[in-house]
Image (cartoon, rainbow, N blue to C red; front, side):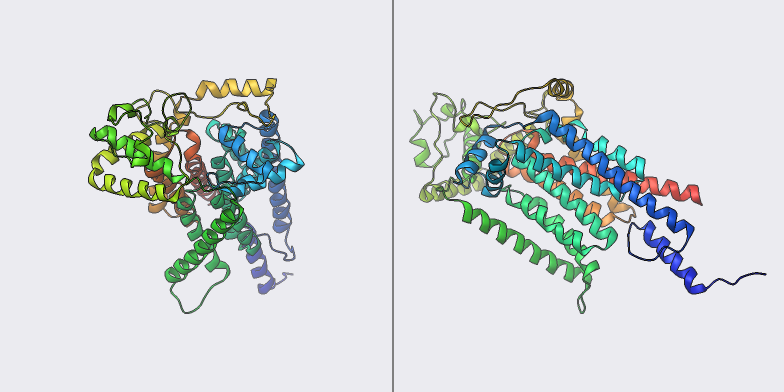
Length: 485
C-alpha cells in the first residue's frame, strides 16, 4: 500500500535544503535524513576553519613575538605611552596601542590584535567558499604566502589597515550569504578602524562602502526609489558618517601641534620638478635653509625611493618640517603654481616614485618586509628564536622574487576585475568592489607615495588573494555541479 506524501512537507524540506546549500544556517526543524547529514557538515567545516585560523595565528605570533617595530612604530608606541598624540600618525592606532601596552607592554598586544583580525577575517571569508579540506588549504595558502605572512610581523598602520579591511570583507560576505544583520553591523567596526589609521585609506573605503550599501538593500529594502539611487544615497551617507567620525576622533585625540604630513609630499614634488627643470621651485622659508640657491644642491637630498633624505638624518643641510600654517599655505601656493606650469616634469617625477614602489625597472624590491626592532629609548628589544631565524631565512630567499613585485599584483587585479565583470557569479558585485578598492588604493600612490616600501600597497595585494579565492570557488562550484548532473 502506497503512502501519499504531504506536498507542504516536501516543499519545506526542499526550502531547507536550498537554504543549507546557500550557507544560511536558520533555526528550522530538521525533518529529513539529508538535512541531518548536512548540519554536522556545516558545523565540522566551521570547526576546521576555526582550527586552521587558530594554527595560523599561533604560528605567526610565536614566530615574530613580540612583534617587529620600525621608527614609525616606535614613535606611535611612544605617543601611546604618553597619551600625547600628533597628527603625523593618525592618533587612533597610537591610542589603542597605548591601552594595550598597559596590559601587555611593548608591541605584543598590537601583534596579537592585528593577527586576530587577519586570521579571523580570512577564515570567515573562506568559510563560505570551499568545503572543509579546501577551506583549510585556502587559509594556509593565503595566510602563509610570503607577501601576506611577512607583513604580519610588523606593527604598521598599513598592516593594521589591511587586517581590519580583511575582517570587514569576511563579515560583509557573511552578511551577504546569510542575510545577517549582525554581521553587517559588525563590519562597520573594522571598516571604521581601517579608515581611521591611514591618511589615504578613504580611497580604499569608497568601494567597500558601496558594498555595504548593496547589502543594506538586501537586508533593509526601501520603497519608492530605484536600486541605483538607493544604493548611492546609502553609500554616501555611510561614507559621510565614517569620515566625520574618524576625522573627529583623530582631531580630538591630537594634542600636539600639527606637523602637516602632506608637506613631505609637496616638498618632494617641488624638489623633483626643480631638478627636472633645472630651476629652483621652493618657497622662501625652505630656500633659506639651503647653503646656496643652486639647483645642484638638491641632488644629494633627492631620491625617488623616499622622502626621508629631504628631512634627515645626517649632518648635511636638510629641510625642516614646519608647524606654521602660514608656511604651509605658502608651500601649497608654490606647489599649485609649479605643477600647473610644469605638469610634464611633475608627472615624470611621480612616475619615477610609482615605478620604484611597484618594482618596475628595479633589480631588487624596495624593503619587502621589516626585520627586528630598531634601537629605541623605550627599552623594547627583539630576541630572535630558532623558529624566527628559520622563517626569516626562507623569506630572504624570495624577497626579490615575483611574489614581492608590486606590478604583478596590479596586473592580476586588472585581469581578475575583467574576468568578474564579463562573467556571472554569485559574488560578482562583491568581487568587483573589493578589486576596485585594491586597484584604486594602489593607483592612488602615483600621487601620494612617500616611500617605495612593499607594505604601502599591502591591501592591494590582499585583494588579489581575495578575488583569486572567489574565482577558484566559482570554478570549484561549477565542477561539482557538472559532477552531480
